[in-house]
Image 1 (spheres, rainbow, N blue to C red):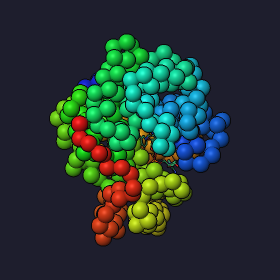
Image 2 (cartoon, helix red, strand yellow):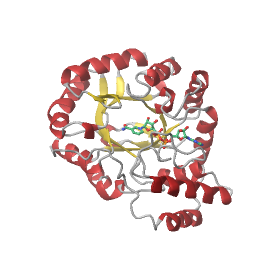
Image 3 (tube, rainbow, N blue to C red):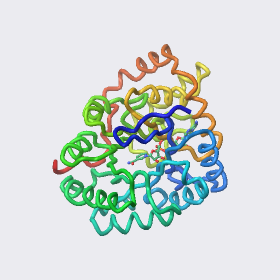
Image 4 (spheres, rainbow, N blue to C red):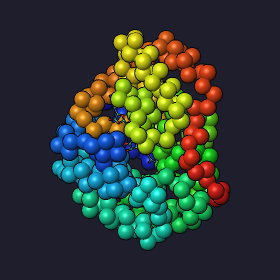
Length: 312
Ligand code: NAD
């Protein structure tokens, strides 16, 4: 396993990180015993970054990950989040964040987090994130409950504006840097790199679109983007390449992202995705993928997700 430094935190994180949202059955029902084996397999193969949130399965994923990591806490870099609790359930108030971290610590069976992130910040005002959420998280850091703090979300401009307004250690972006879309680098990477902020890229498989199994029903992408994903998967299959391998190899090659988080509820997926690390992407096939998706004008997210209301 290769490790990279997560910005100024100095944390050495595995190039492939473990995304635990499928353990909360976010992508369909999973077998809890298999999920536990997947976590153990990931840890045994050198994956040391584990990302979860109270929102995933409405606490189910934290409970399952906490149980699976029992006895391995000192070997992992453990990240969870606060502020999002349901599809439309958000609370970034100081009181809720304080309660949230204690609840998460109990579910995760530990007394500190390595990373604590404000989850999907575009759903509330930027002012609240800057003036209430992040200062509360900093206070919890000083109290020893979290080593580093940061923000997550889909709106790259907002992530940048918040990080400009209040210092954060880490930014997690999702579905913004993969075979279908790379606007992470236009809107966020130069800024976080200059600031030494650690950058995490989640959803390298575009939340399932770049897999043979396809996306879950709730996936917010347009039909055009789904179709593009299917075409990419078919192209890869016709070349005898697994689309998830090509997609991961593309993401791993990013020069600044420290860890790429993939959701992996089964041992087979962990093994496949770790194996993908040992080769580089087939450049000719990547060029074919680029040609294939080029005619699709809008591969961004015209999907009803909120644009942020007020800049901080
Ligand atoms: P992803 O792009 O990693 O896709 C996950 C899906 O792909 C799952 O259905 C999984 O079973 C499947 N998959 C993985 N490897 C496969 C393989 N080899 N073959 C076939 N299918 C495979 O999307 P994701 O899970 O949403 O993102 C990864 C992680 O990043 C999440 O689990 C979560 O921890 C984190 N994340 C955070 C945020 C946020 O903070 N706002 C948003 C999105 C994701």
